[in-house]
Length: 482
Image (cartoon, rainbow, N blue to C red; front, side):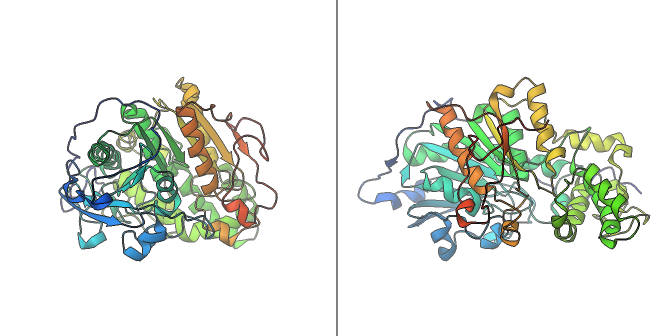
């Protein structure tokens, strides 16, 4: 029997409570200054910092807010960010300050950090030497609030930004159990980032005795999707954002529910070899998985494609497999209710309505920079950011947008360590793009025109893990395909 709504036995989330927004802010951050609170220094009055709307919080005075110190002090979770960065990525240090961990009211319990068993957890970091700005982020995949610590938080904290991140309101592989109707669990992600942004801005104002002069939103994968959604729906909260290969959702596709079933259907035939292998390979190329990415297909078939398809299909179309939850792993074509045979276009209109809850439009209201690797075979670039770039242009917002296609980049930078002669990391391009956004919002030049960034010679060297240029040096000076 097809389920049109969540089972009554599944936990239900509570919508994010409204938090009073701060007034409009000026764009240019003030020079970095040390926060002082009398003779007590940065530890003084930390217990007086209250995060608006938080049900629970705990503050700690730390000698180091980056992962150079928080791993040892227990104020991050390395398992949360494992596999997202190359091993040689720079880890800055020398950022003392205050960290606040806590959670907002919620009824789901998938996040076990701190032994709390409570979702809508957040982390806020307030460096002693503050540059006047705030960076907020949602997490990739279904990870928890520390997932961006190595890839994003370390870099922005070292530049003097306050930083805040949320677990998005539900975590783990059974995130789809949250919510009352299809699409609710992902819709909550957007609510929770909005909620955290408002609360973090107020907390920053209390800490430094003035509101942030600049608020930036950023994230990778599902976190990148949140950047797009926030700049489309709540541009008043932000000055700009950087989107690192965000997930694309739109009712008429393409979405991962279009291309992942085709991967599940054709890859086993390709991997088996024989007469049908060439035709299966061509079908995978036609589905968006680019020629030249074949060396990545075995890993993604084993780790990502099947699981991702099943849990997101369960979130948006639970009726496809009846009473079964999240399908049958690695089922073969022809098996009843097999995700390898899933056909989004043929599904009932109620499925498109579920996707419409979380859909993107391209109507961004503040400057956005998007990065995406050309060898991404979880979210193929031709089915994701190429499409989103076209949506932004067709919405008349092209003047607010820059798009850099990173040749040789794939979905997770850790794979660079396995294939250093074939891949390049996106982290250095992300950091360069972040700096470019800062200049764009200040008195500096606009970022270079959208383009494909060619993979530099000697990309297997240590330097390539920490360097990237957006200005055409070593890049193809041509517009991305759209």
